[in-house]
Length: 137
Ligand code: CO
Image (tube, rainbow, N blue to C red; front, side, top):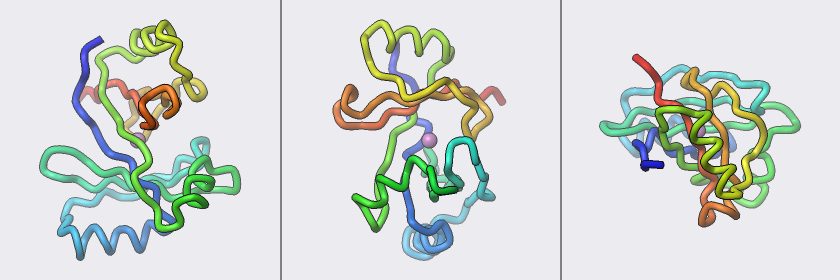
């Protein structure tokens, strides 16, 4: 296993509209993508481009959104996960399974249209870690 590029930092927000104002007006972001609703993941995501990476803003979608609990503990929102790229998602999954790391749910298609899975923060130094296959384009 070789550490791949940091694709994005996930940030949970109570309101996408308010967060976008912050990123535009305080942080100076100019490249902001259209929001994408991912009902099966319980979130609406919106990517903000930085010169070398992206910030993924996550707003809860639906009553069973996995980020509602996070927002209860962090009402202002905050850093939620780090996403690293791998060349082969199945190989990466087998690798982490082999290490005995807890994987949260099945491999799914993420917001970039490539397969992703999440690793339990308690097994990952406190960091909810997203592993995603490198987008091919
Ligand atoms: Co993510």
